[in-house]
Image 1 (cartoon, each protein chain N blue to C red):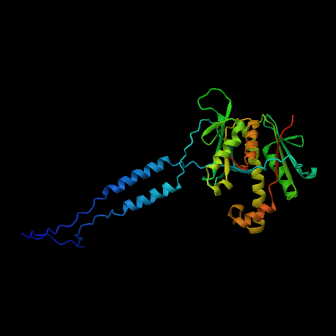
Image 2 (cartoon, each protein chain N blue to C red):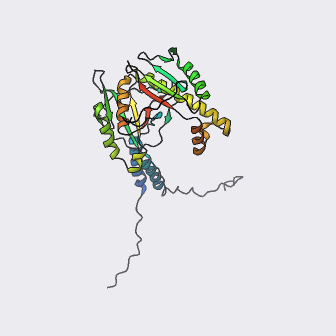
Image 3 (cartoon, rainbow over the protein chains, first blue to last red):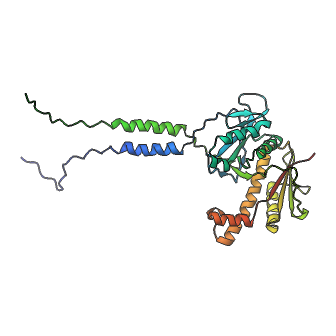
Length: 153
Length: 169
């Protein structure tokens, strides 16, 4: 006996396999995006710092014309003596202008003009040291400065 | 003698693993990229002082002087203030004396950076609220929504005039 025909005819063709040929291209696109956007951090931070918090902090626009000055006690050291680090190197306060000048030379010419110094200083740093560093920055004509901070009260 | 030509087609290159390889690279870049957004208060330092140039004379009535002492206490003209009071006072001072005002900061060398940061934060907040109000009055939208030329116009309308010096002992 033949089977009874269902009321709606089931389509009996097989689902075609999904073509995955373009998947590598898609992933490559995402990969290239990340390769271009990413900014590899090459300097190791030797100091420990706890940033102050503020309500008015804004995002820093360009990361390519940036020199970071860290201020804080040495990592792992028990002493509370504050040190200054310019990008990757710990320097004496009197040499900050020279170090910033040297770092600036590494940037491209148009970036040298819009240089921003991001100051990442520990909350407890005495202002005397900060203003000494600021005087050094003035000396090297790095006048745009960003007091780095966290968002919050 | 004449061999029969094989009519076999070139097999397709198996590209299944390309996706895996690029995934691996993608994950590498995802992990190594520093996504930490640097946030902070952007400020402009004055150029280094030149010996021959005499400091600009500013009349006393235009000066709003703020003092930050070693204990982190704010004072203005001898009276201790909280940050909120300072904000209020500074806002009305700048609103009254838009183009000629000078905010003069003097900070003790023993004050902590955190207190200084809070002070800067307050100053930024005062200027921001004034500029925002001006933007709303003139362009009917917030300062953040302005175009760069409109922003320049507002910035020129309410310039930031700040002078900093170390506290003399």
